[in-house]
Image (cartoon, rainbow, N blue to C red; front, side, top):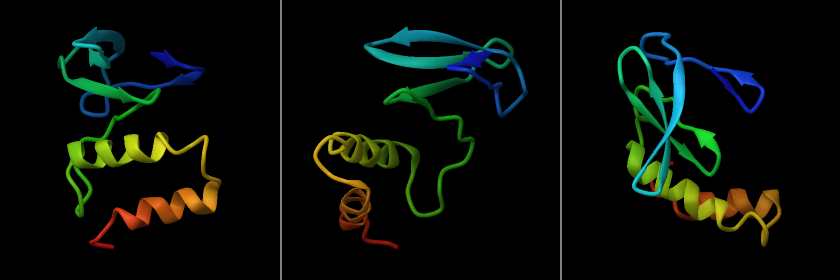
Length: 89
């Protein structure tokens, strides 16, 4: 699949992906293994394993909070904002 000019495929089985929507959310679904990958703020989340410090859903929520600040904070302040929500690291 060509997603915004970048060729991507399912990281699990290398199958082709297609865009779909469910409950006001955008997903990429694999045509072979039927796994769904959410698209968060226009970025496909193609991770197979969670980060060792944070699971998928809390990480996505944190990313949405950072994205909500994109217009009001410069990059160094965005990094500071991100780490203000991060207790573990």
